[in-house]
Image 1 (spheres, rainbow, N blue to C red):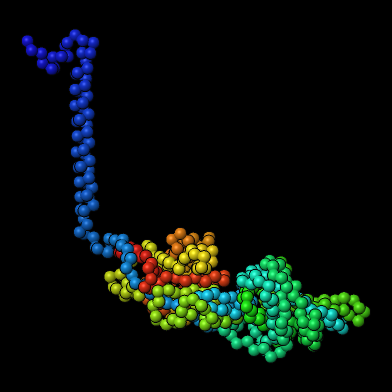
Image 2 (cartoon, rainbow, N blue to C red; image 1 turned 135 degrees about the vertical axis):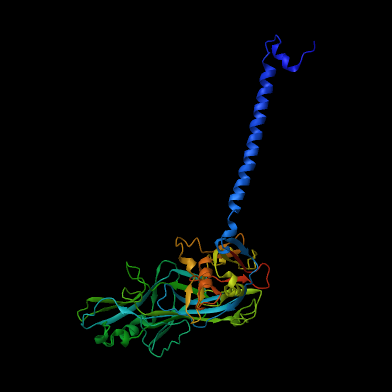
Length: 463
């Protein structure tokens, strides 16, 4: 009789269980897999139904959507303030700096001087006066061309709590010393500078009325008698810019005059007149920019205009800077449908003119390593964008650093944008100013009609 498949179970074989076990196990596995698939489909269907059920009962305001806009218009302009506040600076500058795109900048500083120790009232004969200046940096120079210093007494008394500006007129009709030759320069070293006639005439002038050698905030004192000095460097065929600090460093003095002399018995005596005094002297920087001496570019012909050039400029020492206008952001603020949004991302990406050639000086080592952003109220007050203070460790959130690979500066500003959109008084415009707080490097930015140009990346959550 024919043998059916199921009857093979009864065959006499050492493998008589093989067929029975194999078929049964495959059936069980197939059944479990099918059951799993059905359960997964049902579960998915149920979840979708749970999420969907009741949604029509909730108001639309309970739902959010995340969107981004990359088409907001951005316009840039080159701006210039001929008088920027410079009183009590962290760094004082002296000399000239030249840039083929930006022309020539002349820098000087005005400061009071302060007697370090009390005058003893005894007779005194001046033997000499020397000046010591501690340089923190130098830029330019490098040739054998001599550089000379001029020091002039100022006519008007200055005050610690009074604002002074880079364009402040400095009147000097009193004592002057000109043609003071600077010695060999070395950064982080005190320069010993010899004054004309060994400084005897200057020392006698300072001490001509010893009754004035005192300090008193309630009475006319030495600061009213001898109001201060204006330091300038003579222009040179080899421009040189020096920097120093007139801020007391909590340890010792670095910038001062020493008056050497002797009393009637021949005993040597000396007095110091301090520039970086512990009790602050009033001081401020002066800057004069001459763009007509530039040999490249347009000599800043479009500064403070509405002309949208393909390049925008940013200069050190309170020179020209770049203003960025975001009219698209203003439209969003005035659109009622955007009344409730949370800014997720707001970033300015600013490309730089960045040619790595031997004839173009604008490459990574000559550009500012970091830039800042500030905004201006309708009253004219300037403030740093709040994003700068969100995370203070190297300001990593705000960024502002040069990305030499992408050849851009990035600025993250969601806090500023959120505050602007929520500002009901309209006291802030959708405008930002790119500036550098310190340093002597310049940069040219690609803007408006250029390619690439400034980009504003913006994403938000809409409630």
